[in-house]
Length: 408
Image (cartoon, rainbow, N blue to C red; front, side):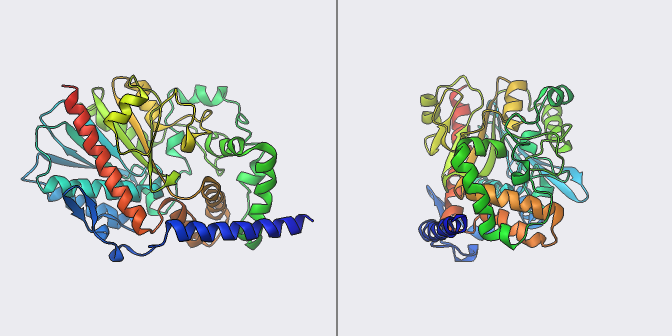
């Protein structure tokens, strides 16, 4: 009976996937086949701003920054992280009040979307579409270069940087119940310590997941995946045992260059959750009401603040700690720290990809299979997706600039 139900479920899932892809990925292709991406009176060729490899994205970013030299007051900085992998920072100095910071690649593989936004924005500036009477704009390219290069969300130490931004780290780890979100209860499911087999990659995973979701509910099971854990170094959503160099590097850089503390609007770009190709803006804390934020950021599909009950894409994060934007908001309360999340696949597909990729990374030999899983889940090769990411991402930066001007 169980096998029969499983087969029926697999058929339903297959049909659902087919319909999903037919609806949302009709133009799945490489970027050379994309029509120009349009925003107001500006346009971009998709292949000029999107990349498939970390080195390609970094080279494009550095070239775009260099092209501004002489016409714009710009400085570039290279922050080494590990081996030849770097965080690249461009500071476009303005004469106006405040600072806008745009960060790509906190979650590695998700950095290709943020990188494309940054390249499109640099091209926008290069065409004299932004005057010097504006806030200083800081572009942080690939906060987690290891994850971006190897198509992982975690960094070189298997640490999720968006679970790692924690003050008083030792005290936090000692006081946090390891099973606070039932990670240990479901550890054999979310972090099996073995190579995935054919059964895992096809029907087996779904047969394991379905009873758990039906018995415990979707949100509690999602919470197991997103809460973060600090005691299983090769496990899923590992937050580390100390703050990682990337976070310390960028915070120290901002402080040393007088960009923090101050009136900063910080945008951290992510992909994976929410309505396909649309963006959710999440604010861990803010003095602005949701209605005023809607006025400031009119193109966002959904805005989540602490008092919003219907969190949609951000549901299940109540036990999550170490989110970079939340840490910075606490350290620098005068700033406005935003997490911009672009939707890709339904959450259960994203969760499946993350679980199997973590198994492959630690115990498997076919690393290309792990890369393919996370590319599908966090960087889909869809014409419509690429266009929406650039349009919404650049729009948010421009809206942040406008908001800064209002506060003069």
